[in-house]
Length: 112
Image (cartoon, rainbow, N blue to C red):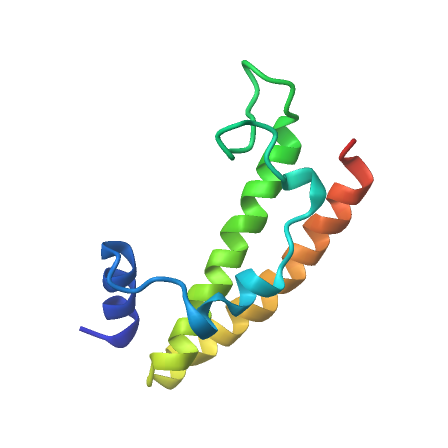
């Protein structure tokens, strides 16, 4: 089993948690104000029972999703030894950081 698959299996099973260096992307990233909880449960309020904008909810969820992709890629860079998967991880980090910046700019323009 290759290293990435081992990491993914361990991550999904809860054997690996996002701690230490792996959380650097999440720790360094401050969620935009528009993404902070609008419900008591801590979840982003969704249409149908609340006043949350589905576009804002989507962008906030995507920011969190991209931050998780960065954290997983950082795990590959830390533990992986395959040059091809390490290269993929580096590309993911660069791309997702840029996309998070773009979505944050969109939020600043559209969130009320």
